[in-house]
Image 1 (spheres, one colour):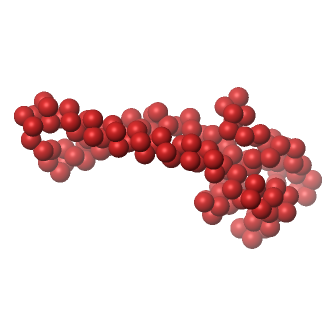
Image 2 (tube, one colour):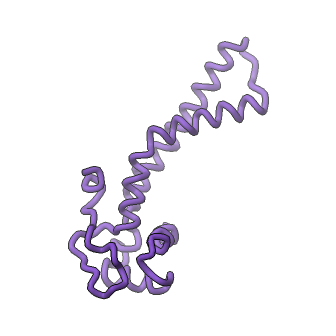
Image 3 (cartoon, helix red, strand yellow):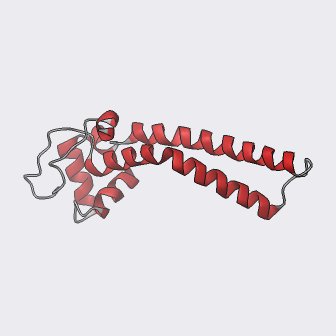
Length: 134
């Protein structure tokens, strides 16, 4: 998980290299709290995402069978059902994904300063999942 976290921080231009990012995060934000910021929100997003996706896929497939004489959908129809289920799931879980990304990019601790020049975005921190919604 922390690899994607470090990558997200690198993509925002907060650090010039992965090594400096890990070093800075571990020292200034804490090893666990810094490198795993957003882990709870990741679970908060992924668990509902999977549940909604599988449920919507099976429900859409059941409707398809009901309207088509209980025949199994063909390969291209299964792909269309899967795509529709994915679109529905993404539409529902996007706010949770935004929270996860905010925590990963900004970190999870409040009150850090960017005085070392390595972390220009450090003036705004989120205090947790609820804070990201505000």
